[in-house]
Image 1: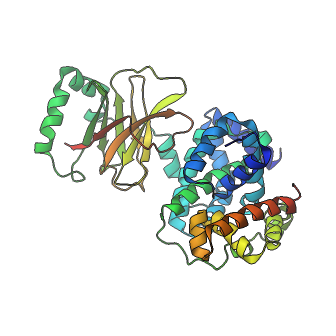
Image 2: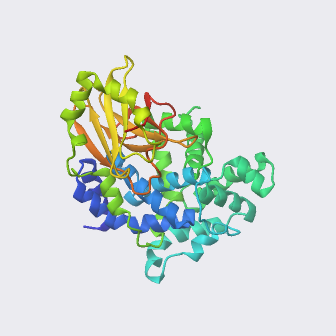
Image 3: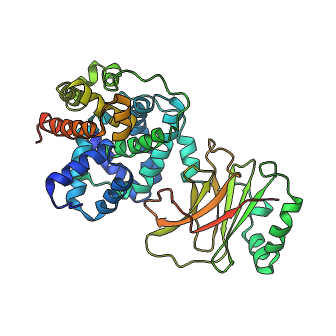
Length: 184
Length: 223
C-alpha cells in the first residue's frame, strides 16, 4: 500500500468515525501540515493553534473528501491554509517573525532536503520555477495573497500601486502559472 | 455570477484558492460550490496547482497538540460529582427551582471567573429550559445536559459557542439533543471560557462554521 492509498483509506475510515484511523492520520500528516503552517504563520503558537483547529475540521469534514479530486494532503493542506489565512487576516498573531522581502524566498529557505528533491520536483520546485517566470512585482502580489492572505486592496496599499493594476497582475499571473505548469 | 461559463469559473476558483476572492464574492462562491461539480473540480485543480508546496513542506515534528485534540473531540467520562447528575438538573428544572437558583445566583455570586462553578440555562423561544450548562474544575470541564429530547432536521446539530467581544465565536462543542448529558473537556488554551456570552447555533453537523448570529443566547451565572 502506498502512502497515498493509506491516507485516502484513513480519511475514509475517519468519515466512519474511526478514532484509531484519525490518530494514524494525525501521526502521518501532522508533521507536514505543521511545517506548512510554520511557513505560513512564522509563529509557533499560532501554528500549533491552527494545527489543532485544522484537525478538528478534518475530523468533522472527512466525509467531504473526494479522492478523485485530489491528494489527501492537498485537501488537508487547503483546510489548514484557509484557517491560517483567516487568522492572519484577523491580525491574530503575537510572535510572528519579521516579514521577509519576498514571501517566495521562504520556499527556498525551508525547501526540502536532498532526499526529498525527487518528490519536490513534482511539487514545490515546479511551482517555484514557474513563479520565477513572472515579473518581480506581479510575483510579489501573488506571494502576498498566498502567504499573507492579503486582499487586492491590501496588496495595492502594500505595493503602492492602483487597485486595478493589482487585480490585473494577479489574474494574469494565475493564468501564466497555469500555462507554465503545463495545464492551460 | 455565471458559473457555467468555464473561463469565469476557472478564474473565480483560482482567486478563491489564492485567497483574493473575499467578502461577499467569496461567500457567494462558497454557497454555489456544493451544488456545482464543475466548480468543485476547478477549485480542486487550483488547489493541486497552488498547494503543491503542502506535500513538499519540510515535515516539522508537531507540538503536543494530539492530547488537546483528543480531549476536545473525544471527551472521556470524568469522576462524577453531584452536579454531574442528570437527575439533579432534571429535578431542578421540573421543580421550577432552576429559575429561582438563577434569580438568586447574582446575589450569592462571586464575580464571574472567581466562582467555583459557573452555570447557564439555555432557553427556547417559549422561555422553556432546553439545556443546562455548567463549567467546573477550574474552567476545564463543561457539563451540558439536554433537558428535553429535540426533533432535529436531518444532518443538523446544535453547537455551543463562546462569544467574546467582537471576535468570531469559538466552538465549545456539540450539544446533545437526545435528552442526554455529556461532559466536554475545554481546550487548555481557551482563554477564560466563563467570560463572554454563550451562543447556540443549529448547523450542518459536518460543517459548523462560526455563526454570525445565535439561535439562542445566554450568559453565565456564577454559583
